[in-house]
Length: 345
Image 1: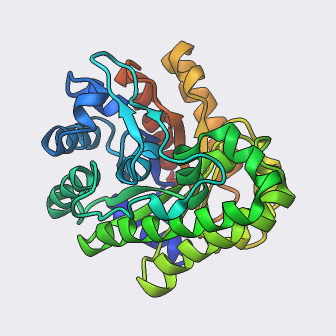
Image 2: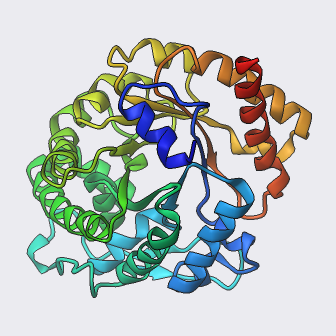
């Protein structure tokens, strides 16, 4: 089966020959092509080259067109991004908005023209043209709350959730419009969408605050992609141990969630009654850095033993470090393939 066929099978409630393999390759793309994250994040040809190398070296079942994921929408709305000459990931160093400020002064991003949005859209279009038959190609998009956090700053936004919740709701409405437009631009080019929202992860945000203030805008965006645009798979990716938030994450309407390496996989899976929701489990990238190939294969086999008890299971990694040796990731995939082969014997 191709990667696209594996994921389609899971979405249709059928079995695949093995769980899909979804390593989290962002700044690591740059290392694969001998470049820097800042250079790749600003050049569609380099970004496409990095994605192609990822496909060649790791043979993933899905590709994500993204690098400094949370910066792009905020930059297009007026944030200033700092780029580097070395292996560092670009960061936002100038916020365009202060808590309680005039949201109407923010420019609403135009995906075809604003900031670096056109760079990622063009790289995605090129990749989809030749790889989209075999793997699922998705555009990386920030969820409304994570875009808002980059516009204002994490700590100021968290304080404003308590002091000025109505203002935060208005900001999330603005961000939802921007996110929908950016995601639609990917969809119009034949790509899928993957939604990132780690700024909303516990313990930064309590379940009650998430439910009351963040969930509505998130659910609106996911409904737009799934119901209005007809995108079959909308992953909602939030790092950390999201077990306490899991019931509310499921209420967003997503049909693909993440069990990050900080969570107890068995307990996490037991809390998801809907088997139509696909679940990706991540290996700890710090473990991959220090472990031998044999240790990586053993840990991967243990995760697969838990995960494969549930339909719709997918295997991934946490965000791969820039300079991680590729053979560490290849050891994960090798264990996945071997596990599938042993089950068929």
